[in-house]
Amino acid sequence: MPSSTAERRLAAIVATDVVGYSRLMGEDETQTLAALKAHRKELIDPLIAEHKGHIVKTTGDGLLLEFPSVVEAVACAVAVQRAMLERNRAVPEGRRIELRVGINIGDVIIEDGDIFGNGVNVAARLEQISEPGGICLSDDAYRQVRDKLDIEALDAGEQHLKNIANPVRVYRIDPASSATGIKRLSGIRGGRASRLGLAMAGLAVIVIAIAAWAAWSGIGRAPAPEQPAASSTATKPDSGPILPIVAV
Image (cartoon, rainbow, N blue to C red):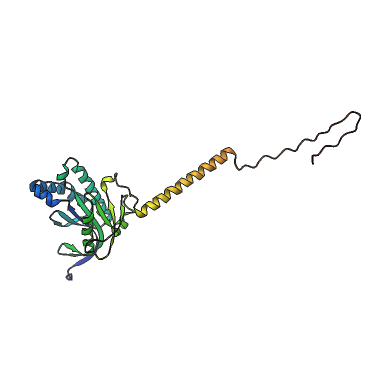
């Protein structure tokens, strides 16, 4: 049980680690450590501070971060991953420092400068199933940012995470496929709504076009009144007037 000095609060938790860290260290310890330190100093740590997060602890090749806002946590993670993609372009594939990121929101226990709780565990498991250079969000985290950030988020369905009692719905973000600010990609739910919206917009255009054509061509106007047939009166020599002939 937590001690009486422990504090609880809701937090956005971010877990990261380096893909293939053991292999990179085995091949060249000096180069790997130098590259990782440079990324931290020049990119990662400044972005964490810019987005109001702080480093709870380092775990060898990984970081455990806390943010007061899920929006800031996701924005920071996307900024880091996109910048890392640019930094790695000139680096041979086997020597690249690539990160996995997991993000969750939950109630955490803070004690002795560390954070504990199921919310932290879920973030760590999400990081483990993330693609290299990618980001995995829990459903709780995604619902906090879906209307606030323009993000590409693919609904990956419910996942059974290691040592987590209940399945967690996971959303995957691929910053590499994003333009500035990233636009939300249709996942299982988003796609249906997007397709319906497009269909309704298309139908409205068709209706307007038909109405305009009808107005231009005169469709729907009342026909002009028919003119009555002219009566004919004919005369014959040496006879009186003849009554009009009506066809039966």
